[in-house]
Length: 119
Image (cartoon, rainbow, N blue to C red):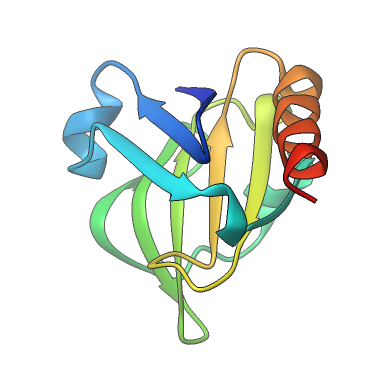
């Protein structure tokens, strides 16, 4: 699971627990200017992941780490797809972040409100 918050002009995603080991990351910091938007998307877990490098994927259990698909890198940290949020990025290492959060609606609102504040 991930914790998402805004620090100044950055979106900060903190990876929790053992997911840090699978992902080989403890956090991601993205300038808000490179965040295109966020949506709650429980169906994304059924979509193709691509090639895992590095990370872990056990279908129906967890998807954590960096996945390469169609020339893009996507960061995943999802165990419970019903709590998945997709953050679309531009001009970043990752094309998108697919993360599990406690409250998807609140996380989407947090990101979208931060983007409105930057507009």
